[in-house]
Length: 368
Image 1 (tube, rainbow, N blue to C red):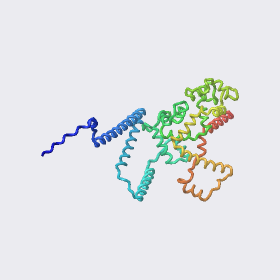
Image 2 (image 1 turned 45 degrees about the vertical axis):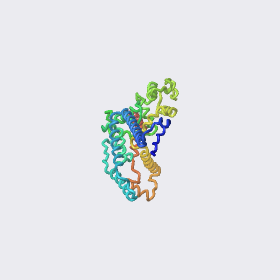
Image 3 (image 1 turned 60 degrees about the vertical axis):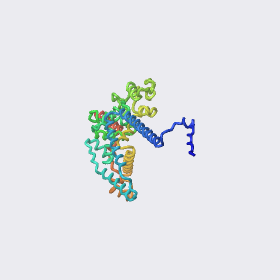
Image 4 (image 1 turned 90 degrees about the vertical axis):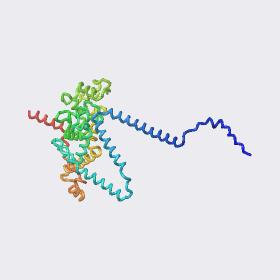
């Protein structure tokens, strides 16, 4: 007897409504696509932000940054495509030694920085600077020289230093521009920047005093005092516009004028008035040799200053050990103290120049 075929089971209404999703392989592919698209969007967003930032910079600076960026990318590409690093410690030490020796030979092989202007040559010799210092200054100068012209103008100099143009900055640039062509070559930059970096507090005050003493009369009258306050306040009045009352407060001898001693007292009471001039010295030190190198230069000058003071007092050089004599005689280049010209350094002081001018004027009057 033939068996009856089984009738199919009725479909489950709940299962029939459930939608069948894609296969697991399709899901993983979709997730990979989403991750890749998110990375691409992030890269595009970063590229747009970088482009907007570059467009806000000057054209010449954008070109220099583009060249530097290309060099960096090439270096990174070469590094990533290289083989895996060797595990042998001896090979690592040899590679590090090779890199170190390469840097040393590269430094020795750099061209000599030659100065032409007599004042620049004399100033570097007076401070005991060598080729290493000049190369540092040359690199700093080239960084400021955005357009690569071999000269820097006031815009490049003060933009690099982050300084707003003012009467103080204009006067400083005019002092550095010895030939008056509104541009600084490397020799001018070295000669005057080093001099200003060596200024004492009184030298900077004398620089500012002469700047606002428009008639060179040795005093600042009410008109000159008003112009000074307006120039350094940058639209933010220091004395609420009542300059006459402020002048009377600083005019201790009641002659209606401010002499240099009263000007010094003004700075002691309101140091922020002339702070831009002192800030410029700090930034010039940073953009010439750097803070660390300037500390070493000043320590070397102080060393020779102490020797001079002892010699002037005792009539002979201070006692020294055998090692100190050997070091100064044979190892001065590496471990000793570079010789300096203390008299020339002092001659660049504003206060010393004023004293000499006053002495010369008194001598002429006495002779007449």
